[in-house]
Image (cartoon, rainbow, N blue to C red; front, side):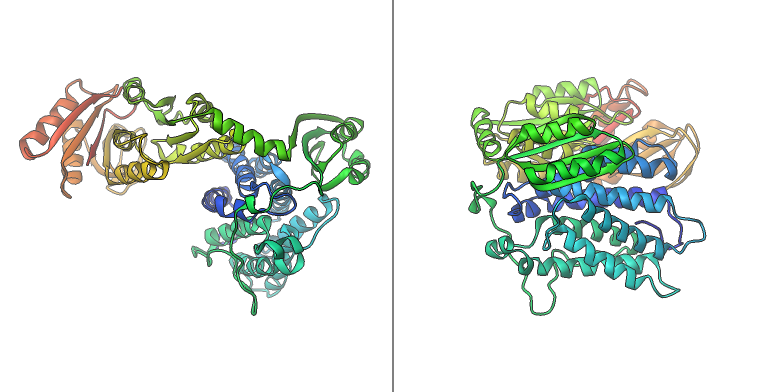
Length: 544
């Protein structure tokens, strides 16, 4: 799905696509969840699709620097991390896309490869579903594949044009889904899974063209855009199966047709995806035992998950009632910073440069707060995505209300935590903490480990680098001189408080020299020093 304008598929472009798709699904998650009224109105489609793509992203990042290793890792990560009906279908699509790109010959036109990939993804998704229903993610996928096929026919067609046509057709098909599915028409919404797929296709278009497609579903002529509603207005009824059964299955590929035939009479929303001996099985049924026994006859089921829809909602309510108060989770890059966050009442996760915490570590910290509302401060740009996945998992599995404030520096986290007030409403607290973090202008000093080109010019190993708002803005040869230059730039816009955090490396008096410079040149500004103990950065600074 992803070739840059130059015409070759690259790991960088595929990684960029998965990053944008995951971030955009995170942003649209609540909207998509609110659209979820079919097949079961449990309000988790957006969350499940986000978690599925996030699993694919994590697998891709851990696969190394070779596209040949990255594509199978992406497909396997999506398969293993797929959650829910739409998430399982999306995993099959991503696997088919990755497979077609992996088979692309150097001489093939990338436009044709992209069109073929979308067609194979659509065909694989229809084949994976026991009883395909129109007006769903499948319909949207087929419209995108048809448009891609037509756009790829000209000899001079480009991959970016094919994806733009596919994304536009998907949005138009999404706006028509209420005409095809009575449950959507009655609720006044478009299909949730189809909306999620549009987000993914829009992400691909953005990566290849640099343009942001129109937000939300774009209706065809004569059609209006339905308004999302609260799924609570469409309660679960006794008309459909009561349980969702999911499991991974180790089984020979030739055993899967019999498995599908055995599962089909047991319920609905049957999806079996995978290949090469590993499968992800999903079905809604009233006979949990029979669904699992069918898997045992076909191979070895594992990671079995059984969800009683009505009990799931009740359990979320019970867990929410059992938890009380508000907690904060903060990622700390050093022992001193960890102590500061802990003293302020936060649950601390160890992290920092080169030590990004895992999703499970952040999730464990969220659960450890024992709170019904939790605010997460990742304090590192690379940890924001991990925190988002952990937050959504905590919401789905534990019914905890979680918000991630995207702090990208330790000093931003300190600033945000300083204004945390549990007595305020949750939304007000998040708003105040977010605003404070954004207004904290951050900087740092570090030492170059290799030759590179920075915004401030080339650097050599051993050069001192000054960081301003996440970018290398100063190159020098003396830690104190560069630190003062960083402070001077941060204070150019004014400020009332400077925070200096001492690191584990560098001269012992570096932080004190920074404080002395501020007191001499900006006597009206207050200075606070902390011992952070962070590695790689002899000093961190912030101006508020």
